[in-house]
Amino acid sequence: MTAPTDQPTEAGCLFCRIVAGEVPAALVHETPHTVAFRDIDPQAPSHVLVIPRRHVPDVGALADVSAEELAELVRATAEVARMEGLDGGYRSVYNTGPDAQQSVFHAHVHVLGGRAMTWPPG
Ligand code: AMP
Image 1 (cartoon, rainbow, N blue to C red):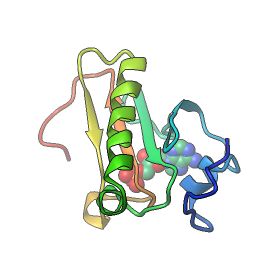
Image 2 (spheres, rainbow, N blue to C red):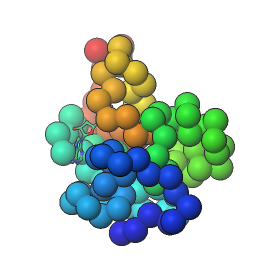
Image 3 (tube, protein in one colour):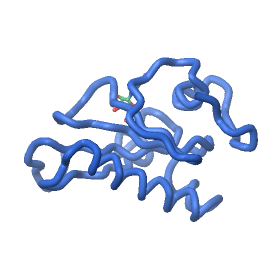
Image 4 (spheres, rainbow, N blue to C red):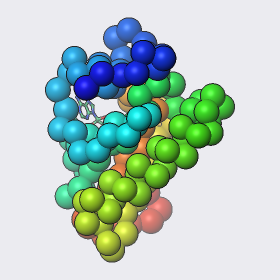
């Protein structure tokens, strides 16, 4: 898998390296601007990360540079949920910043499903 040459990457970014195929990941879905792969530490029976190929630190930054790519990310999220058979529902999580425990500063959506969720989240 190779990122289109016009997609900004950041040296040392783990998710940029997954997009570039330099770090292995269990891929489940790809579009021109997004890649989806299984979370290495799943928090639900189905736990997939959907990321933009472009390096931006969070989804707010993605919206600032390209509403079209943000929309593609959201569509890919819905498609992943469909492919995973999450007919009973799923949760999309965008952890943003340290208080939300964001640990990888390349925008990503957690798509979690396959079990009943609780609210409020922890
Ligand atoms: P966050 O804490 O919201 O920034 O989410 C980052 C997610 O990336 C965590 O759920 C990690 O388990 C996941 N993660 C870290 N390294 C990898 C990897 N090599 N492959 C797949 N998922 C990863």
